[in-house]
Image 1 (cartoon, rainbow, N blue to C red):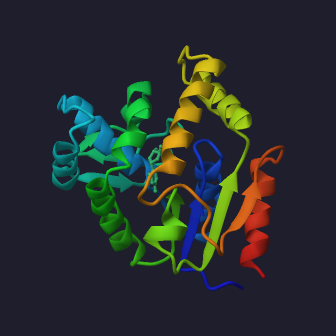
Image 2 (spheres, protein in one colour; image 1 turned 120 degrees about the horizontal axis):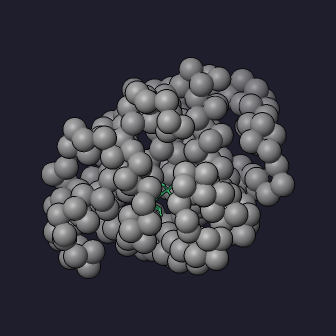
Length: 225
Ligand code: DC
């Protein structure tokens, strides 16, 4: 058995990491934390306060001031967790397109990353947590006992995301989702600070053509080694 108090699952948008991580957390009795929701909450707060996305100082101050809470789901509407921004439930609002179109720029700011990383480390230090994001294995918890980098082709990921959005009643088409995703991938993986990339000791799994259960089984096999 691998001694993994912290399991890091990184990868690009819609690679399936949240779904797999949430199932794994339930199976192991671990806490599940999707760090992407924290960057999304900062972005939503910025939009609500009409702070221009290019104003790095103002966005950074905002990231330090706001209170983001991530809790187990309190409503049965397919959410994986509750996300509270200054006490208000923003779980679905952080999924809107305007947030998606700005979140990569917001999460490239050093001050924003420092504020979020600090909170993530505090949560992780309590132990038994599965943390999902882009830089968990490389920056937030380089000492994590198991690091997975879950990947899939951009077309496959866009197909999954478009289906998810359509199921939630959104009218956005595949092509738009694909373009948004390519833009986000480019910023996330080329940014100077904590870019999206596998840690040297991460196990890279491609979820192309695999079911959620098959990916889950691969990770369980790694844990049982
Ligand atoms: O996983 P997601 O799509 O909800 O993430 C939203 C954005 O947040 C993503 O475009 C990059 C950023 N992010 C990050 O920079 N670092 C993380 N650990 C998690 C997400």
